[in-house]
Image (cartoon, rainbow, N blue to C red; front, side, top):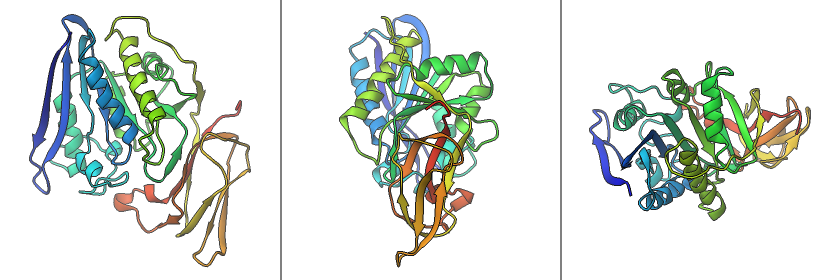
Length: 319
């Protein structure tokens, strides 16, 4: 069996609470890849956190080849303060932050994470639907072109038993971490498995089984990996974003296929008067829908409009 170490990574931050998160490291007796698995970037995405914890328990009894590093909860303060999507310290979206030891709390957190895990060959980032997100299980694969990195990242994604893989352009988007990893030559993916912050057995098992299968896929565990044939959607996608504060009523569910021009939902004022309707810009898969009616368009800290998002659609003309 592998040698296992479990420890806390801690570092003081000059303008707030200390950076702190758990790290488990499995070092096998045989050569193999170095695989990083990180969960809990966002406070309410519990399926990934609980799935990562199960992987830690399982790997203690499996013959790991190479090294596997697992952070079961990265954003500890967000998780334990039940803070949705943004950091409770600086109100930044961690997924969008470039590492900076001298920067904000979230930038420093990313820097400490990358320093703690060091050089890796593959990176798995476990996400799921936040408290206000009805989400259909899928895996995001960062895309800057059809090259070897795309192929290796897609191979990781197809280790997960989900119906869809989202081809996500990252070059001209805020998604900093996936692009940083690609630029370093590291195949990487982020799962989106879970909904509404619910610790459901089905989605926890999908995260758990997919991670073990992905490690097996790249040679970190013995045995034959299963390749799932998820349909690729994208690269074009649309975020439906609120333009006025009010109460949102969705007309679709996550996982539905919609036609161009189909009604996605409507915004009403608090007296029940309809303010606006939102329609699909093209034939698409509904990746997720906001299930929280109150929408505040004046809340966009640091320019981030996550709390204004109503739905996310991915181009899917063959659906």
